[in-house]
Figure 1: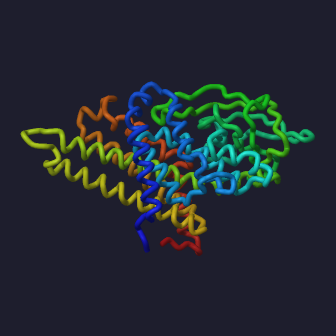
Figure 2: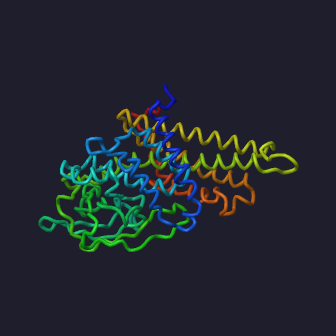
Length: 387
C-alpha cells in the first residue's frame, strides 16, 4: 500500500503551489472582500491548462488521474476556495460530456472546453429540489427537432459563462420511478428563452457567481440531448457527482490546511506573558488536533481518488472523504479562530474568510447527512467491503 505521491504528482503539486502563492494568495483577501470576479486568475487557469483536467488528451485536455485532480482543488483552496469553484462545476460537466456525450457532442464541445475558450457548469438544483433531484420540476417536451424547456434552477456556479450549460430536466414527467424520465440537455449560451436572473448573495464562496436561472420555452435542439437517449440523465449526473465529491473533499482539505498554517504561524509570532503562545499547552493541543484532522482528511481523499483511478465504484469512499474532510475544515477553521483570539474575528486576517468558506463543503455535492445515509446503506448491504 503506497501512501506517497509519484514524482510526477509531486512536480505537479509544486507548480500548483507556486501558482497559488504568486497569483492567488496576494489578492485573495481584497478581491474576496469586494466580491470581485477574478478575471486575471481565470486567465492563468487557462494558461496552465486546468480547464482541461477531465477532458481526454484526444480532445486537447490533460486527462488527469484523480489524485492529481484532487491536488488541484486542495492547493487552490489553500489560497482561495472560491477559485476552486470556477473549476469544480466546469470539470464535472466536462467529465460528464466526455463519458456520456455522443461523439458529435464530444467533438463539438470538448476541445474548446479543454482550453477554457468555452466554460461550463451544471444546473441541477431548484428552489424546491436540492438533495431530492427526482423532485425537480423543470420539464422538456419534444417539439419536432427541438425540446421546449420550462423551469428554473438556482445556486448555479458559472451560469453567466457556461457554454453549454448541462441542465437536468424531466423529458417524461409521468415516469415511475421519476428518474426514468430524467435527461440532461446541453443548453448553448444565447439560446432564446434562457435567462440568468441574478447573482445570489452569499456568506462565503465569493469570486465565482452563483445564480438563479430561468428557462421559459427555451428551444434546445434534439442533438443537444446528452448521450442522445432520453431517460438516462439521473445516472449520468450521479456518476459525475462521485468525481464532484472528490473535488469538494479536496477543497475542504485545502481550507483545513490553510487554517492550520495560519494558526501555526500566528502561534509562533504572538507573545503573551513573555513568550510565544505556541509554548502554552492549550495552544499546542489545538495545533495537534488540527494537524491530525488535516492529514486524516487528506489520506481519505487520496484513497477515494486512487480507487476511482483503479476503475472502482467509489460512492462510499468519496462520501466518506467528503463527509470527514468537510467537517475537519469547519473544525480547523474554528480552532484557528480560537488560536487567533479576537484577531480571528477580524476581516484583516485570513481565518475569518476560512470560517465563512468552510460550511459550503458540508452542503455542496450532497449534504453530509446524505453522505452518512449513502455510507450506512453500503455498510448494511451484504456485498459491502470497506478497505
